[in-house]
Image (tube, rainbow, N blue to C red):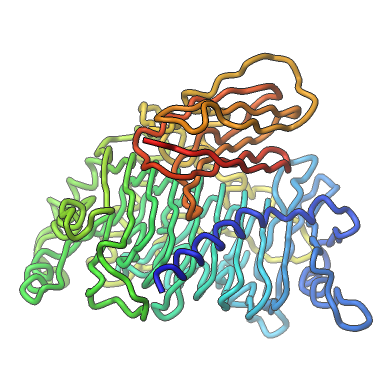
Length: 562
């Protein structure tokens, strides 16, 4: 069973990495979809079949606007999908804004509570899209996606998702693969539940498959909640202001949690008396960012043949911080009829977590290092107003056991709603499009890969130490050279050439397909480059390194011998 799980992880990672929508390059497979009339997106996709009822498996639905007016793609009904669905947006050539997809009331006044229902079979790929999940008349909202099936996946890249229901996850799934990159989620957490306000939630506490999240920002939102996850990669994400756990999955088996920023997370804290009472029966712990549990814990429902010694978790180069205003608020709260005891502030790890990381006999491969409690120093124009809103939000939750209608991110306000009109002229001011947040911080927080911690989209052009441009000449082709020396110990050099400027990533994976190092991730000018890779923290074995640049992708093998 263990070998089967390992093989599944490897095949899953390779499949996800290969799903870069190679069909995008095939112009004949692209179908341009008009925004109007409302519901046209549903109609076009539903009717896109041949005479035999078959679909083009490589179809890409392109949402593009050619006028200076931004028009929303309204969805008046849920779109049921049991096929490969690829929707790609093209920014408006005049305004530069992404196409917007939003729910729309039908004739009865109701609107879809879920925009996309992915049934068994097929994959979902969203790229360059702005999902406004609140109805523009502010009377309701929708979940983005329900996804079901063992062999399906969702890939999202360079999307903004705004306005989720406070009581449900943005994406509900079971036994599926998720790869979320370069996205911004402006969500709504519920201060009274640790299982809501999450971007991905596994239905009914069931297991998932593979979750990969890199270079995302979660503004008032958690990332993932579930029961059991065979493989999780959480790398270079920024978690900004949240009342719930940023990550709620205690039975992690293979996980890499690196280079993230956790700012003002679990801000509701925990009732101290409730903790004391719960500790008496062995189930109470304070709110914490890293929440692990043993495989014999009460939440384990997976029938897999798992062992504590077989768990592999890497927790490294993360920063966490709670601003002083929050600490002052926690100290100032007095006993009320709704709060039996004072608020116990959250922690990065509690005694159970630290025990698991320190007991190398039981958990030899659970490792934590270089995680720091340090203020990233985000712009004060963002933090001051956000902290005040967060404290008010938390306080309403404690005093009334409800959110009181308070949101960290304001609802859009458009009235009257006219589907034939474009997005409101004051969209940028009222809804935040482009988003008003700028989370580029000033502290010098960097991981062992040389990058700033957190979402690297706030640091355009950020490159890791060790990447050197060899010349300003323009090479004739994309090329990834064999590392030298090979075999190596502990350092080796990797050369590559890119004839066209653009986003470039160079990453290293172990034989299971788990990412172990990011050598380059960001914009690079055309040229020839040389990378010095230091593997001092890795074990001997075979590793793969992969270059992705402007549609070019190549993988080579190298051997570390210590």
